[in-house]
Structures are given as structure tokens and as C-alpha cells.
Image 1 (cartoon, rainbow, N blue to C red):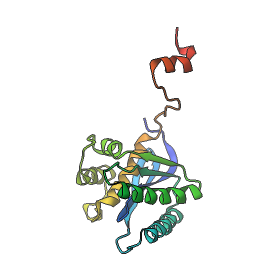
Image 2: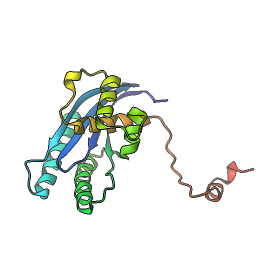
Image 3: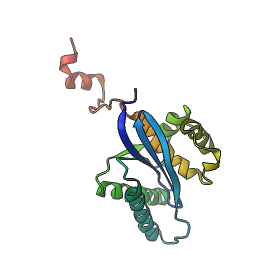
Image 4: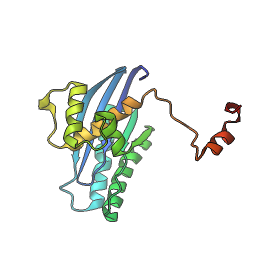
Length: 188
């Protein structure tokens, strides 16, 4: 069950090196509301370092405008191109560093987990995720962005909202033997 909160602002980011998507969700009580979504367009920058600077400037501007309490960010998908992964990781790292500089806690979500949380299908398309968000958050079809990266950012924020109040397992266990060793009071 989602725990009610007075008000919480969640920034969701879908990292990218060409288009970076973001979405802002306001949670009052147990009701989420989309307050903004958009993209950071990096196509005009030929130099990767200039892209990173622009990501820093824009994420900082978004944080200063909406004052999020938490950041939910999509974890990079492991592809075959190592150079692309490295650049994507840098872009994600810059966004995370900006949030950390403002003491905003960060949670990473795998793309499969986000799609599963929104649609119930880990293999859902970007369009299916966007359509489901539009229905759940009740925003007009006219507000649907051209770039699905924006709805992917919003999806990260909504996935984080759905995790509110769910207990997190602080202890990791590698086996039953490990569980028993760490929890002797639970074994009779």
C-alpha cells in the first residue's frame, strides 16, 4: 500500500546522449499528478563534453524550478556498443551529480522494472508506456509529447511513486544458509 504523504515532488529522468527525457510528479496524500515533462535536446552539440555541460545546466535548472524531493532515474540498458554505454553512463552520472549536489536522494530503476510497473509488461513499447501514463495520470492527449523520452522520464517518476511505502530489503542474502546466519532469531 502506498503511504500517504503531505506533498512530495519526484523528478524522473530517462538518460540519453541525444535526447534526455524528464518528468515531474507531485504526490499529495496518495494521489500522483503530472506537473511537467519535457526533454533536454542534445542534438545540436557535436562535442560530447558540451552535451555533458548542457545536461548539467538543464538538470540544475529543472531542480531549481521544481525543487524535487527525490530523483528516480532509469539505469542504463547494457547494449553491445561499449562506447555508447560509456557516453550514456556519463550523461546519467552528470544528472545524478547535480541531484547529489542538492542533497536529493536517488533511486535507479531498470528499464524492465519501469515498464512492468506502468504496463504490467516488461517488453512494452514506449507508446504503450506513454498511453498508460496518460490514462493513469489523466492528462489530455494534446499534452502528449512528440518525443517519448519525456514520457519515459515521467514513467521513472511514476515507478518510484508506486514503490512508496513498500519495504526495501536492507539485507541481501546469497543463500538460505546466509539468511539463517544473519537471522538466527527467526530459526527454530
